[in-house]
Image (tube, rainbow, N blue to C red):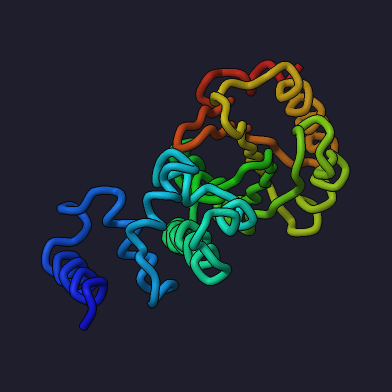
Length: 228
């Protein structure tokens, strides 16, 4: 057994006994890299990654192409690093999909937040509800600025009609921003409200997400302005 083998065994044993709470960021990342880099000094690679991207969050948010640019990080290690947040997103989505009924804005926020995990682009989702406020579907309607996104108002209205929605909630994110609606957000919401109303579907809320924070247009009283 070489020096690296002994170190790996000790680090694994520490994790199995205590979890990650006893490890610093370097050791935690080093431990993960064991499974993609079986014959390298992963401590050195972990240092290089944290120096390049600034933090663990920076490492796990980095594009796979940039990860591969770090010395010692090959395709397998980059794929493993990018897999972790995607697996966590799927786990969060599997949990919120157990929510069958949206009774309030808090339910909507809890349901929708995981859809925006790891997103670097602005994305629009539409949550369709039936007459009893049960979830029919939650669909990505486009990417890009909310006022220019492919998720145009006609397409959203057609989707809501197709699934026989009685009401919808829309949500989009402000990557690297704050959860405050812009003038463009307000104009988009007003136009969508009017379009859905003409086909007998109620737009209940527009939720804006930034990281793990969100605001509800319904809770802030903004939805009442879209009626006129």
